[in-house]
Image (cartoon, rainbow, N blue to C red; front, side, top):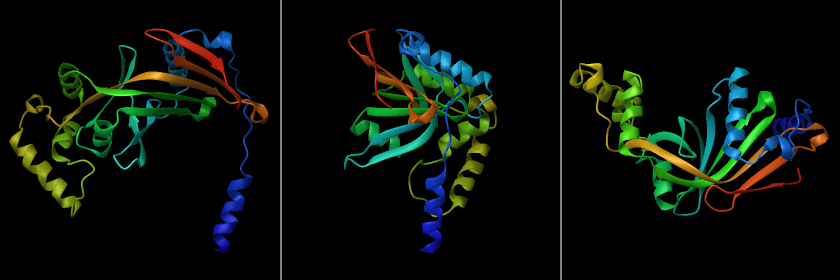
Length: 221
């Protein structure tokens, strides 16, 4: 118990001031997707590891929230695209309630972007095209893994992979399984957070105000 108390005290002492940049209403512009692309490219230039990593929050039928990290794989038609197993926990959650949240955190730039929206499956053609672009091993893994389900041992996966390697001798012969594909998250609300000194951070929010229309306002840190 004493060790836990010491750790808690240590965590409470952690401090970091934020002073890299500012964000005001003029800099934010009127299009949150354009601002996101600008910030994303700046994060790429900064060589941030896993710049496209985003937290995805969903809720299940018992109203228990779930959050995990997934990878952004595209911006299509004003939405954020990622791919997964439709039968996974996240897929089941989205089937129950397609209201989701995303979070990008680029610590090195002292920035984060919070997104609230609705998730829909992308077209089969788009899922097929992305699946074909994946490395051979990733395609085999998508077929082999019953994502989020309990398994008795890792050997089950490895044996299944060996069976599939014998079945698919050629790289291009691996088909996309029906249970695997993409989702697109259409944003309804986006918050851009820029760290500032003394915890007086800049927070600019865009909220959907109709088709292709956004209401912009500042909120307190």
